[in-house]
Amino acid sequence: MNQVVEKKQALDTKKDQSEILLLVSTSKGGFIYYSNPERLVWEINGPHLLGSIIHHMILDYRTNKTILMAAKTREHGVTIFRTTNFGKTWIPAIQPPQNKDIDLAHIFRITPGHDSEPGVWYAGTSPQGLYRSADDGATWNSIKGFDNNSVIQSVIKNQSKELLKYQKLHSILINPDNKEHIIIGMAHGGVFESKDYGETWSSLNHNLSNNDRQNSYCLLSHPLDCNLLFQQNQAGIYKINLGDKKWEHIGKTLDIGDVGFSLCLDPNDMNKIWAFPMEGTDIWSRVCSNGQPAVYCSQNSGKSWYRQDIGFPIWNAWFTVLSRCMVVDNLKNAGLYLGTTSGSVWLSNNGGNSWRQILAHLPKIYSLEIGYVNH
Image (cartoon, rainbow, N blue to C red; front, top):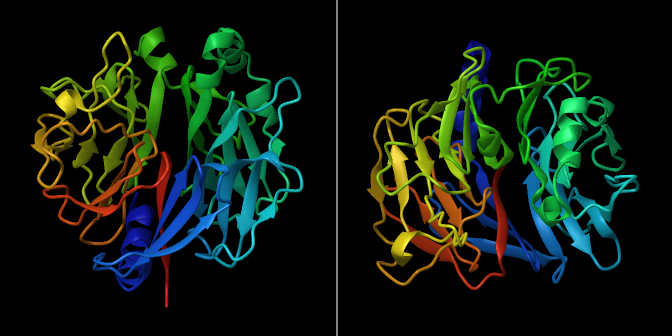
């Protein structure tokens, strides 16, 4: 933990002097927006691959230069594109992630590898697959230990065809102190851990019911302590310290209910969490309750929550926020970003206490990511 904290503190000053990138992935292309640390004005770069489905874009924090994009295009199908000039040119993977038994619906998540392995990346797909690239995204190979794990594969193969499109490997966490230590989160499967670079895997579902772990949506580790994990699943918001063997249901004190897709962690405070609750009725509405959007914040690791809605519409605003559509930047005065399926992006630069819309009229937003470019 000390190494992580020291590294973060060393980067804080640089980030406060950086240009911020907001990468917005949508159903009709990718958009990159730029601002200074004050975050008052945002300039646009894009759209990129206009008309194509973009599920995820992410800037390599190790170089602050390479961007990988998970896309589905008419020409290339499901693949990963790479740019090293901030979108002037995009190069498709020579060998994208592929499943020999079934066509991939999409690539859901891309994650940079460990600091000690420049050029290594990970990708999670739908249906669930885990892939690694060792050449900066040019070629991708499935991780055999994942493919050969009987528990993981039984979960994947026992799903009905109707649920196949909902299967996805949504989260990939790399321990900053140990490249061998990888944790993944899967919708329909839950959380698994490898301590040997993906060769073998063990379940971290522990006390969760079969239904809870099968409907996991978002998994995060805290920037200040990679052993502290949080997840949003169909049953609510949970946290665990690795080694405890028990998930704690920290969202049960949220009076509006803790069903939703997304979570955010304050990079400067281990006790501060944000969530965007949505209705979880039998008809699967998944919109903000009563058409009144609000973020809920806890400053004590879920013991209590309070509503943050200043600046949002006060009624008839039926926001849906997907699992990678609420993110936080790493500036000392952390900025919180929220993207909706109706194509708007909202920003709070005061910890969620008030919000303003910074982008509107975009296509359906699938994910947001933050990056930094030093000058």
